[in-house]
Amino acid sequence: MFDNIENTEIVSSLCQACKKESRIVNRKTNSFIIRTKGSVVYDFSGKKIRVNPGDMMFLPKGITYCYKTVSEDKSYYTSINFLGNIENPVPKCYSLKNFYAFERITGNFTDMWNFGSPSDKYKCYALFYDLLSYLSSLENTGYKEKHRFSVIDPAVYYLTEHLYDPSLKTDKLHRLCGISDTYFRKIFISRFGESPQSYITQKRISHARTLLDSGDFDSVKDIAFSSGYSDALYFSKVFKKHFGITPTDAIKQI
Image (cartoon, rainbow, N blue to C red; front, side, top):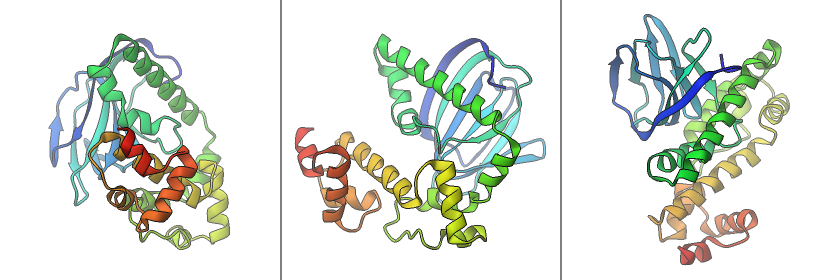
């Protein structure tokens, strides 16, 4: 669908919590709905698609559908609504866990589009076209590789839901998939380019940096715990290794 889109134009972007359930009739734009928290089930006249955190739902212009939140907590999303001529558009869910700019799109895109400078608009279009390129590459990936990667989906979903839980352990993830730990790690590294522990660390530290830069936290302990670390001292060491500065010094610079 995304190999050759004509007359592309970004219309709007939102970052907010969604309703518990709703029905949309004749959608006005094409939309990328990127789930950042909570899971949602879309219903397209009986065909149901579940979208978990880290996934993105493509909704074509003109479609009618229902959705319902299926997680206990509120569900949050970032949307990019756009116009463009897409060949044979159909609603489809994509995983963005391997997309290099996932954190930037879910954390900065909406603010840049709605409140940024003219140069920020260009940055948004650059991210948007990078996303289209990523989706095109996913669609052209061979079936065999997709099937092999899907074996670890249960563990990936579990990781997404419990990423910031300090008690999260990686040595039991393979059991969720019904495969050996060695095979699980091999598939995980092939899919994400890093080990499960490295993946978790990268996500947590990126999240911690976002919390710190927001200015809403002035306690390293609170930032650490909110990012999945029960030991603030260890968190500080990991943070400094990644950013070259301690979280305490980073807070002072805000």
